[in-house]
Image 1: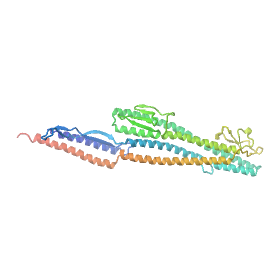
Image 2: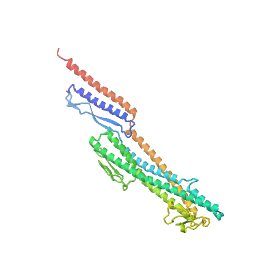
Image 3: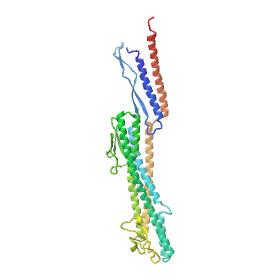
Image 4: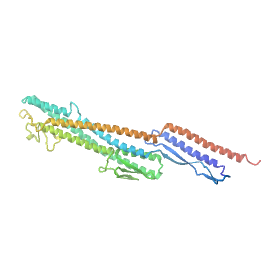
Length: 419
């Protein structure tokens, strides 16, 4: 037969679990709006039973000994976490590309009355006016002004594209440093988690927030070890974090996704469109007359090296005057350059629209995954309030158990004494 004091132990264990459940519920409620917080739950198990002898045929029988607090764990879904990280990286990649393409469209500024196509048309019109009045000083002056406007417009566009590239290169350095900073912090948290135990829930949440931020920048795979430590690699298997050891990302790292990949791809895109613009401007200048040096310019309108052409170095022939009037020295068709530029504008517009659509699609996918993820790990205040009432009743019942046992002991000790 078990001791009468067994009831006190049963009640005490119930109080302990009830108290832990109420405290955990309060912790959940307090962090309902904390970014990255994972709902925590108390895992209770039945305590080992006691063997007791009975008058029945089967002996010994077992008598329950209450409840034990097994653990307090986070509620997470690893599959959803990895899916979220993958989608965050893809969105980060496309967002950078969309922003870069938007800036290119701003630089191109078409269609516009002050854009390059308008400058080409106005210059062609000035040539036509000069052809109608070849000896007209005003027609010559207008032609020169239109040529200056064309060069200024082209150089302004070229400069704007160069600025986009410069900003992307700076962004690349900053983003790389940001990613390496996250790697260092994750490794430090690995050390703390290993020291404090794999159920350091709030430290685990803090680390997961850093991992999610990292996944926006580079494509990663996360392998959780038995001791709670995260080992993180790139998609190609290159180690980034191995316990407390960090391998920093650099320019030679094989980055195939995330914001860093988007920056690298954007640099290629901008360079491609800048080269196309350079070829278009060169084609138009050559088609209307261009010489490498003023000494050989004669009546050519532009000065520029066709073998090593650069928009930045294109100039209007300053030697043109009434004694050296401009002469249309076509070696090509200016309309071809206009068509090339129109094709460039159309291609850029289509690529920008495709990037915008991709961003919208990936945003929707990420929001859906996050909604599903929050249904698992997020805190529902209604659910927590219901749990609070449930645990309060459990705690009260355990306290009632102790009170009842106390009354039993009082009866035995004080009311069964010899008279």
